[in-house]
Structures are given as C-alpha cells and as structure tokens.
Image (cartoon, rainbow, N blue to C red; front, side, top):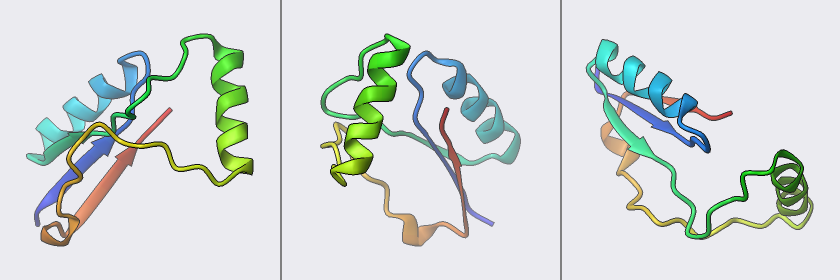
Length: 79
C-alpha cells in the first residue's frame, strides 16, 4: 500500500511527527508551504485563519502538489 504523509508545520513540531510517521510507514513525505509565511504570534495566526475561513480564501502555495492518484492512503498532519 503506497502512502503519502502530507503536513503543515509552523514551528517544526508537526514536521518532526510527520517525518517519524513517514519513516515508520515507509511513506512519501510532502510539506504544505504557503507562498506567504504566517506570523508567529498566536493571536495574529488565529485572526488570519479566521479571516481566511470567512472569506473562503485559499493562500497560494510555494510547493509542488504531489499527484495523489498514485497513493492508496494519505495521512494529513496539521496543528
């Protein structure tokens, strides 16, 4: 079974977990990277996230999106 672990990590904690899971499952790994980085302040991140949700915004990505059709299982990690 071919597996992809795809994750978003602001501080590196989720990245470490995703890398460990990918290693255990022998899975491919992909990081979700927005074109414009989020601010590190907790309340600024909360405000930005709420604004994106309410306006149905979809930030541009600074990454190549994997072809998910080749995977049997996709694990998603985010804070």
